[in-house]
Image 1 (tube, rainbow, N blue to C red):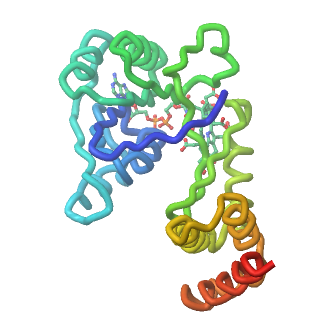
Image 2: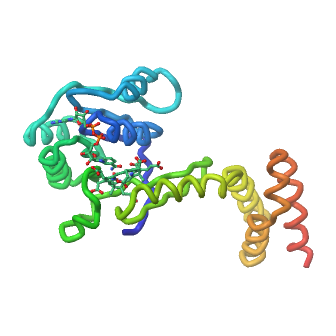
Length: 229
Ligand SMILES: C[C@@]1(CC(=O)O)c2cc3[nH]c(cc4nc(cc5[nH]c(cc(n2)[C@H]1CCC(=O)O)[C@@](C)(CC(=O)O)[C@@H]5CCC(=O)O)C(CC(=O)O)=C4CCC(=O)O)c(CCC(=O)O)c3CC(=O)O
Ligand SMILES: NC(=O)C1=CN([C@@H]2O[C@H](COP(=O)(O)OP(=O)(O)OC[C@H]3O[C@@H](n4cnc5c(N)ncnc54)[C@H](O)[C@@H]3O)[C@@H](O)[C@H]2O)C=CC1
């Protein structure tokens, strides 16, 4: 499996099943997408998530109380036109039907109740795994074990969490610097060398912890050194 990142802004994600797994997936996708959860019952956390709709965190979560069978799942996909269907019920037949309907409709599907290893023979490129994710906006690190051990994915995610502290600020600073160097007409090879040094400089990482302008000053001297060589 090869990881890709998707932008779900302005899109709909349909989650079938509102238990603990459906809640976790809904919460993840609600950061960007409008999420509709169809289920006969909902975890309390999910009800809270849907009630928080007013806040600016995302476009919101809608709960629909229904227990669709295979045919009804197709209707929901047609009606809501999601880009991704998450099959997260505790009923294998419903999950299988949701997966088949999503694939027929040509949309992405994440089936929560089957490891990918079990399904490698009939895997479709639209069949996606939700990785464990660490975010320090705009940086995100995703961990998958190819479906072999989700608990390990979670444990590794916890390790990476401390490892990437400050990476968001570094991405913004180095992103600005590469644009500025381009605009100044600095030749590509020099530019690359300068940016490579900035992102590897302990001094810049440390200075960024104190604040953006400290990081900027430190980065400027790293770059100056490269430009004046
Ligand atoms: C294939 C996949 C499909 C998918 O859901 O996308 C899948 C499938 C299954 N998970 C199961 C169990 C558990 N899943 C977790 C946790 C997470 N599971 C996630 C992803 C994935 N889970 C995909 C593969 C990811 C990869 O490649 O590694 C994470 C990373 C992302 C997320 O879900 O948000 C999230 C951690 C988030 C975080 O904290 O960062 C825990 C740990 C816990 O709960 O503490 C357990 C209990 C321990 C255990 O069993 O390992 C079962 C057995 C169910 C049963 O026994 O009935 C199946 C079905 C099967 O394997 O057959
Ligand atoms: N991918 C993952 O990370 C994990 C996956 N699992 C798997 O995911 C499945 C769900 O796990 P949980 O959320 O813990 O179970 P759960 O029992 O908490 O939730 C299942 C939900 O599905 C709903 N449901 C039942 N029939 C439905 C239908 N026809 N249409 C829509 N919704 C329906 C139920 O009302 C309930 O809200 C389990 O079968 C398990 O195999 C379990 C743990 C982690």
